[in-house]
Image (cartoon, rainbow, N blue to C red):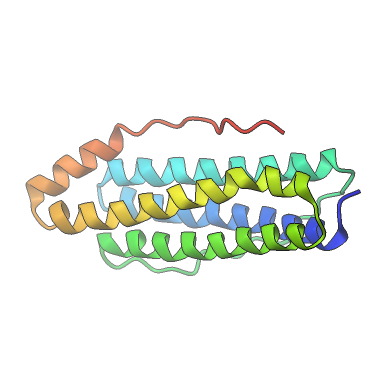
Length: 170
């Protein structure tokens, strides 16, 4: 049986992942409005990934006999005034999500819940990748984004990103 505290933290994380999807869709909207369809594509895919994370965690709870409850999803609270804002907000947000994942992992470790720890190993690795990707986006923008030709090329590169489903089995 899944520890109640661990299950509740995972349930809270499901809601946090859904908020993350909202946030990234909001960033995509900003970039669509700015005519940066590649950046918008990047964040549309990010939103899709966050929804996948929520669904994986939901299935994990179901498979462990826990009923998932949904909270209201807050409206995104970040306001983008320039193209680099969403990039910086993304890194901050991914660092926050990492702290939430670590909290779940720690709670599972405290009750010797090795199954949950093994399941969350993938998310720990994923968060490392997400933070690196967000940091790389900032660096690329700082290198190329201030030059119109560089911004055009970076936008074109981001337009080529394709969604791939996670390879985690439950």
